[in-house]
Length: 342
Image 1 (cartoon, rainbow, N blue to C red):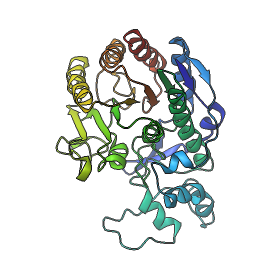
Image 2: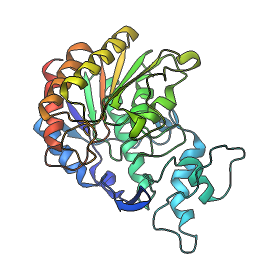
Image 3: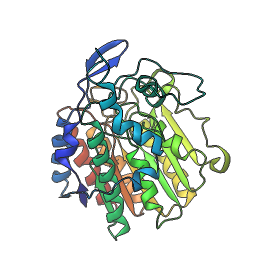
Image 4: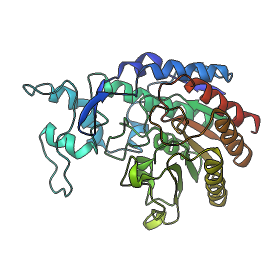
């Protein structure tokens, strides 16, 4: 399998502090993640390839032009404010919105659902290359590869059509799915990250040609809190095309595999032509965010189950998974299990 990575550009983004429980804390979404994940991909036998610059076209398939303009210019505009923080961090979050404001402070509140995705000098460049990494992996699959892995950083599944949050700016999994849609009528997205993929859900919620399935820690007391419940099943043309499978905090391999079995049945019943796996590794028992308790061996079994059940053209998009000794090994374990059953 080929692994797509723009290492130099994707490393540049790193606004160290972000707001947690009212306190600025070090950001766990560090540039070091790339080296750890690259090592895991290489251990699994992946060939590392570089993405192309695809411009705005594949990104606009999932996001609005207004949002891209905000991301591109926000830090420059913010830096003109006397005494402002180093990185764009919103201090207003409107519940009810009417007109679109001109102030960058107000636009930050409009487009950023929380304070965990600050925008620094290099954020826009890194986010674009992360999106192009997903787009390139999709192009490899459209060109005949059975599967391709997109080593995306920053991650993307909390980014909505015009919102950032949860370390995410552009929805890489959605961008990959939209790219696959050029040749495949029906696409499924299976999200196995610790957190619910609320941004992905937002983008496709009223579409009947893209199925979104997410297995994650129960949001009743866990990020993203407001999305990820079992009664969110899609709207309009997308009714029945969204499935959330929340798990109690601390759930282990057995519980995850049981939910995965339900998710795989849903995907099979949808009869997709292609698949995107939103591959979070933060469900690991030793991940610093500590929400679920999947083991390294569990990731192999998750990969095996997906590979055996869904023999489809597939893009694997890296989502969460934060620095710990086993991050690369967990990726290698998943990819090895997946490849063994393809």
